[in-house]
Picture 1 (cartoon, rainbow, N blue to C red):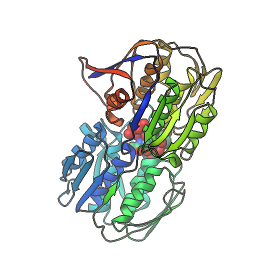
Picture 2 (cartoon, rainbow, N blue to C red):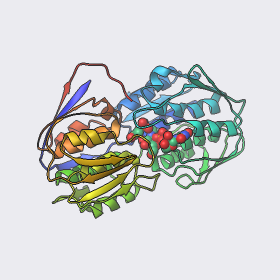
Picture 3 (cartoon, rainbow, N blue to C red):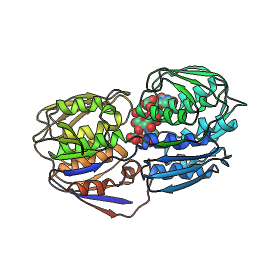
Picture 4 (cartoon, helix red, strand yellow):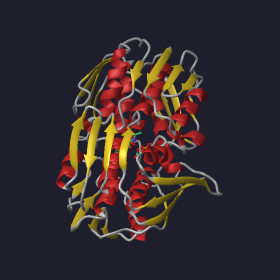
Length: 424
Ligand SMILES: CC(=O)N[C@H]1[C@@H](OP(=O)(O)OP(=O)(O)OC[C@H]2O[C@@H](n3ccc(=O)[nH]c3=O)[C@H](O)[C@@H]2O)O[C@H](CO)[C@@H](O)[C@@H]1O
Ligand SMILES: C=C(OP(=O)(O)O)C(=O)O
């Protein structure tokens, strides 16, 4: 297990480049199962989760060739139909293989993902969608088993907005017989990226990015050849890094249109944004103004940036209220932020952050991916040394973050510490 040691208290100044999005890459990799051919994904981030999804595809019989920034995934022989517990327990997104497996071969077995640090995260909506398409679902021995002769198009209204649920059913529907209409679908840009890649391979998906998505099933797909969209959560994290250290970062590859709600809040807090030929320049000169946020499905404020935003607000000149509405247990960074000197009161899923003048370094522990990013930001702003243990969480979703921060002037060191690793 690695830990990060950050010598904080200095502004970050320099350039950072945003990598391809984890949350777009994982469904795209699963989508390759639908094609039964040789697929190419570009702008792929080098992340632990990408390695796990590659291992899962290999387990199913695919040939995966990993090169820097690129994956070739040949699914001609991917006849396997079981995603085992050992892989699913380290990455919930493994469930994205279920829809494609059933669509392709009429059967799929996936270990039930179960809860994780941020909440219970059931998959009932994925299963409801598959059942509506004619699947028989059985739960047995901790596994979900789905079977169908050929999936049939259906009208499906999700009870709540689910990102991977929308992606799973959208993928399954591409090879179903007839038309599928998804209502109350997730509108996240990663859903759009997936639909574009599938349409490029011959799928007939309309409306991705809206809450109603229509998919006309086809008999087969050609190959996927697609460049993964930039990671909007990583871009947002860097914006907040500039803000919390009162520095100036030139962020390359940031897509502002995916971050409208976030940029609006950061501007309210006093951060400055300037689009230049070299990238998006984000800067801050003084303590942020207090700004309250409520997380919501896209285009709302993303839950995956809530913790990092809280790190920024710990140094605001007033009080900010931060409310998490997507996951029931996603404020675990609060006690760790307090260890760095933050003043935060929590009630249920709401945190009231009373800005302090400065944070000071301390040993802290990362509990999940975005909580880790929040602690990195707070550590960069805090005077003295912050030791962040369990950074394997961070490595699930941020490509070489320590190196990127060092390039922007941060003093960060990675050390290994004894003990077993666990992803969730
Ligand atoms: C790989 C990936 O893309 N992960 C993202 C995806 O996760 P993921 O797709 O797992 O998250 P969902 O959008 O499904 O979850 C939203 C809420 O719906 C609930 N729910 C979901 C499905 C279901 O069948 N039943 C149910 O009750 C969840 O417990 C949660 O409370 O979207 C989340 C919300 O933006 C992000 O935080 C994750 O980074
Ligand atoms: C919660 C996240 O990811 P996952 O859905 O893969 O656990 C995240 O990216 O913040």
